[in-house]
Amino acid sequence: MNYLLVGVGGAIGSIARYAVTLATVALWGESFPWGTILINVTGSFLIGWFAALTMPDGPSPASPGMRVFVMVGLCGGYTTFSSFSLQTLGLLRGGAWFPALANVVLSAVLCIVAVGAGHLLGQR
Image 1 (spheres, rainbow, N blue to C red):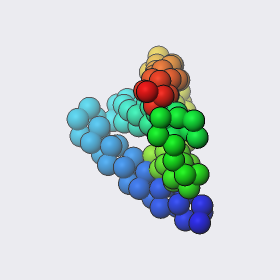
Image 2: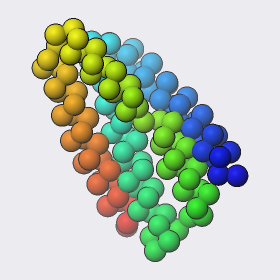
Image 3: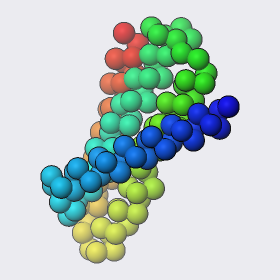
Image 4: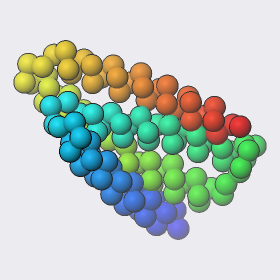
């Protein structure tokens, strides 16, 4: 059953990732991977919030199946570390050292802040 939950959650997360990517490209263009950063930050927030909220001793405990569906399936299909890595390599190979560094720093710092914020909110 967990495999099915991961698969369905992953499909939903992947579709959401694609939609967010198209929207950010339409808004801000393709010169910098804003979509990937937005996806990773919001995915980090979601997993932090949901993990804290649904722990057995959290404010709203959830079944192990629900946690697998959201945290492994949905968040796993939604977040984009492999895309982040490929886009960063592309920036580096194109000689765009500062944008590559900005992508790494923004992604790492914002995602850690987002997972912490989500976790704090989920505990309440």
